[in-house]
Every structure is written in structure tokens, then in C-alpha cells.
Image 1 (spheres, one colour):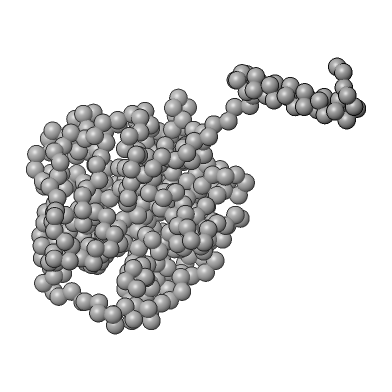
Image 2: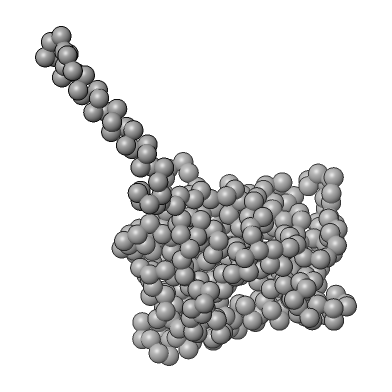
Length: 412
């Protein structure tokens, strides 16, 4: 090479080196064997979750409270048996799945889990955003599946059936690799009359009432073979709907909300693989199946709480997951007094009777849950001295209430 000056010659050599390196990178990047493989996956929008492939829905996100042995063939657990309180491992691959029943107090519990748990790696929330990251101590994977950690990736307020078909897929997409996990389902229930009236208030004020239509359920990769349900109040403005109309519409999904959120709808929704569907001819038969299923799923949940008994519920949560809240929920009775002063209407005896009759499944389920919660608490207090002290301060109906705290902030 002939160079006019040494400087020009050196510049030409540098340019030639850069060109050679660039060509080498292009060639090597086209050869899969010569580069490291990365798998980047973006989460799908929440309205696309129903379009998942059949094999994804077939791998249900079974709660860990049903696990016994490992199914090495497909990476999921099989054989049902209750989980023990020593099971949960936040550093491993265990996930707490919060099933959020509308207007029952789960939002308040969710904030407690994100803000007040004593963790080696606390949850991180960005100011101005409604998404928080609750990662494990030494890796970027979430131990909590809820609205504020992953959004409504399984639909808005997904029920037990939808979560079982969706959670595994969403977490695989979020982490970029299929992973064998155990799921610990938790939820909060509330007095059905109070819960129903609060949902009515939100509907009447047109404040983000998600529930005008029941959620579509799927049998593996196909929608269920049932006719489209009738819809209440279609084409009418919420503020023009009376309470009597709201409670009287039999197709209102707010009715027996607890039961429908906790039951396995595959038992009644016409899945081809379910031989018993054809036997459910009457509404009474279907209601019995739903109620029985909801009770069973509630009993097998790793934890559930009642909004009216927050201290008792929190003690059970701490004992179940071996996690501690850094403080008890601060009493805010003065807030409830302010809420009463804002025109909160006390239901008449006739309204209570009407709501009770229309939500008979939820009334029975709540009574069952209340009995089960106290049985679990007293069994735990018999074996744990620390919990035994709490048993002397069991909540009264006039004490702190998760759902009423939630109601107050909803109505500010």
C-alpha cells in the first residue's frame, strides 16, 4: 500500500480494521451456533390472554395446596393433598397467587403484602405507576402474582377457573423461560350483604364497575359450549338503575360473587371432557355444584382471610408463610366515622332480607369460611404459643375491617 504520509497510512489501516471487524460480526451473527442464544419475551396485553394455545391452557396453574408428588413428564404436580405451613419458599420458585374478589378487601391485603412485609428484598414500586416488583432475594422473578405486581394479565378480576388456566403462562412469558413452580392461592372474603351493597354503590356511581358481563371460560383451547348469557341493564345509564332492579336481575354477576369467583366453572360450563355436565338440568343442580366446588377450593387454599377479622387473618397468614408484617394495620376508626358522615346509607331490614335471599350461596359459603377460619386459628394457637397470645385479642365485629378501609379510600 502506498501512503502519501504516515498519518494517512495509519488512518487507512484503522478504517480497514473496523470494516473487517464489522463484516466478521455480521457473518457470525447469522450463524446460530456461533452466538449465545437469548430468549426475550414481552407480555401479551391482558385482552389477548384468551388466545393462548391449547397446550398452555391444558397445563393448569394448580394450587400448591393440592400438591403431593412431582409429575416429571410434564413438569407439574399431581395427586391432591393439603400443603403444610413449612412449604412456602420465597427464594425458590413458589408463588403466592392473590385471587381478588371484588369489593371484599383484597386490595387492602395486597397493599399490606407489598408495603408491610419484612422481606430480604422488599417490593419496589415506582412513583406514579401502579406496578410494583416483588422479586425473590437473588433473582428477577416474582413471588407474588397480583394486580399490582403483574397487572390484569389474566383478565380483570380473574376467578379461580381463569387463574388456573393462565398464571403459569403469564409467568413463563414474564421470566422468558418455562419454569416448574408451586402456586399458593390466597383470597379475602367479606360479609356478603356488605360486599353486595358496596358493589351496588360502585355500579350506581359508574366507578369502574367491572362485572357487567360474566367472564368467558375455556375448555382447554376452546370456549365453553354454552349460550351467551343475558346481560342486565344493557343500554341504560348506571345512575338510572334502582337498587331493587340491581338486586332483582337474575343475570347480575354481582349476585353470589364469592361463590362464582371461587368455584371451578369447568364442572358446569359444558366442557366436552366433563361427563357430568349433561346431568345438570336445573339451576338448583348447578348452584349445588358451584357451592360445593367453591367450598372445596376455599378449604384447599393455602390461606384465606375474612375482612371482618383482619388481625386473626394476618396471624394465620404469618404462620402459614413464615413471613412477618412489620406492623399491625393501624386503626382508622376515625376514617370510618368520616365516611359515615359523607352520607353512607345504612340498609333497611327489608334491603338486608332481599340481598340475603338473592345471595343465598354466598351466605352459606361465608358461614362455612368463618367456621373454617376459626377452626384453623384455634388449631394453630394450640400448637404455637405466640399465636395463643393473639387468641386473647380475637377481632370483634367493631374492630378494624379490611374492606371498610378499602371502601373509605374508594369513596374519597
